[in-house]
Image (cartoon, helix red, strand yellow):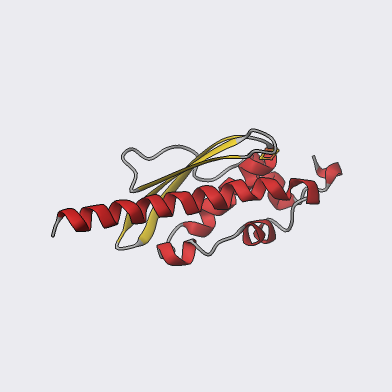
Length: 133
Ligand code: FES
């Protein structure tokens, strides 16, 4: 993999991904598919007082998708949901010391799935606020 331009960090996250798994009854859940390659990613978040306390992912995808999911979970953990919403594919790629250009689309999957999970959380919060009125 190193020959096609993967950084040490990408290889490290690919072989030793952080936060793999699922969260039962998550506060937010996001699932996105990559139309380019058909790969799929799911992100689960546990949130308390708008802070992401725990985050897990499941990826059915390539090595870059696994490395970027791992990195996005690391970046999101402990952040306020509004801050985590600002994490984009360039942040993820930068933290991994770059991705080969033809693999940049893979990092969309990670940040998009995180954003979907946060939107899901915010949607649920609105509903429960409305129900408590
Ligand atoms: Fe599908 Fe990378 S090739 S996410």
